[in-house]
Each structure stands twice: as structure tokens, then as C-alpha cells.
Length: 81
Image (cartoon, rainbow, N blue to C red):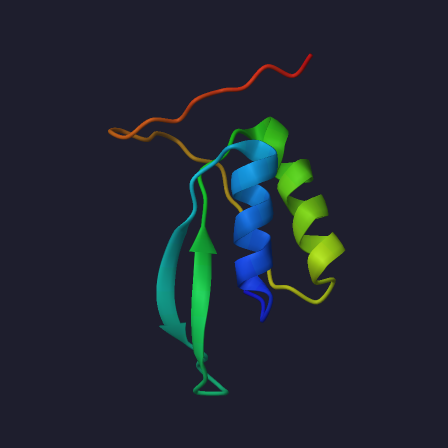
């Protein structure tokens, strides 16, 4: 989560060609309304996403976990060469 979520979303979409879902959330302690970005990526892209986020907002809160499976939609892999 970051106050710069719009910039982060655009960079992920353009640099990696990935879609980003936006969830509306509220800070449990602050009570502030926040946008939460959710993106399905390959494990090889985790470092790229973290680098994008850290470049834009070094204080952003990032959560990632292994995806055991996904159905529906399209998760395209892109060439790394």
C-alpha cells in the first residue's frame, strides 16, 4: 500500500504488461481509505515489481505469496530474452 499507488499501477501495467486490480480498503489504525493494488505475476517477476515499487515509494507496504493455482482470465508469460 502506498500513497503513490497510481504511479505504481501504471508502471506495473506498462513495464510488465500485467493487469492490476484495485481493492478499496481502510487502514485499521488510521481509518484512512486506501487503494490496495493486487497483481498476479510469475515468481520471476517478483523482483521487478519490488524494484518498481521501491523506486517510486521506498516506504510502501508490499505483500507477496506463492500462488498455488489460478483459473480463468489470462496470465501471459513474457519472454525474458
